[in-house]
Length: 63
Image (cartoon, rainbow, N blue to C red; front, top):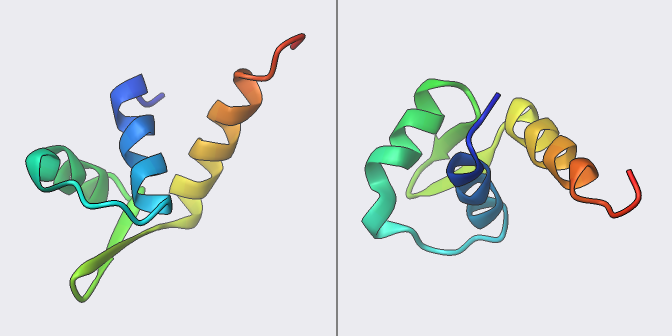
C-alpha cells in the first residue's frame, strides 16, 4: 500500500503540475510501476490510476 505522500504525488502527476523538488520520490514511483515517463512528461500507469481511485474511494464520507 502506498503512503499518503506517494498518493499525493500521483494526484499531482494526474493534474499535470510540476514537482521539481520531489524528483527522487517521483523516480521511486516510476520504478514501482505507478508512473511512466513519456519524454519530459510523466503519466499515471493503469496501476497508478487504480491506486488514486482506490484512495479517493476511501476518502468518501460515510464509507
